[in-house]
Length: 214
Image 1 (spheres, rainbow, N blue to C red):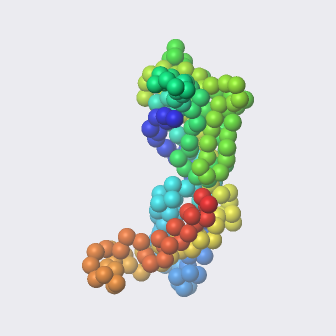
Image 2 (cartoon, rainbow, N blue to C red):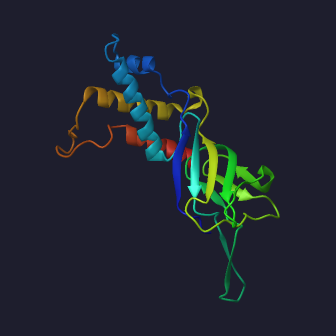
Image 3 (tube, rainbow, N blue to C red):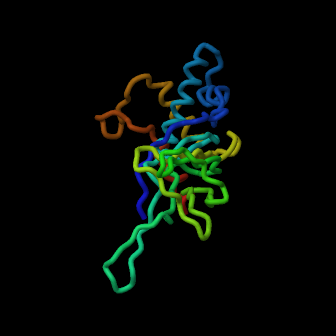
């Protein structure tokens, strides 16, 4: 199966962060309001780092995935080297967990923008999220041009309350690390080189990723 390289563009940001400023302050044991703006910014940065490391959205948010064309599938006749390509390919959404697809637009062979009828495709939510042509159909032909296809989709666990606790803790540990160390820190175990992630964050992300895909 061949899927063209895609580009992700945020469409609608999450309505809230996975942890509040008040929760972050409680974790930091900060009781004054002087650093509220800084702490709120650190929460956003920590959430974005977690999302980037896992290729996953935490709180639900809308994105656009643009492709140069629909994915194609390769078939080969038994006992023959002859291959053929068809537009039956599975489209993999590169940001998990996929919640829904709100629209698929494309530029047809004549250069006109079209919106694909939702009855023409099936959405498989979760991780990885998949979009496939409806039974008995195939993807429409598109004009050979960059960004001929745009998929508007929503990814994320839901509200902040729905985000796994392991990922919330990873966000809090990052906030704590950055709040205490305003510049690059040195790993005390090896004595040189900046710390990429504070101790425990990598383990939390790995544990959540393993459980998510198991």
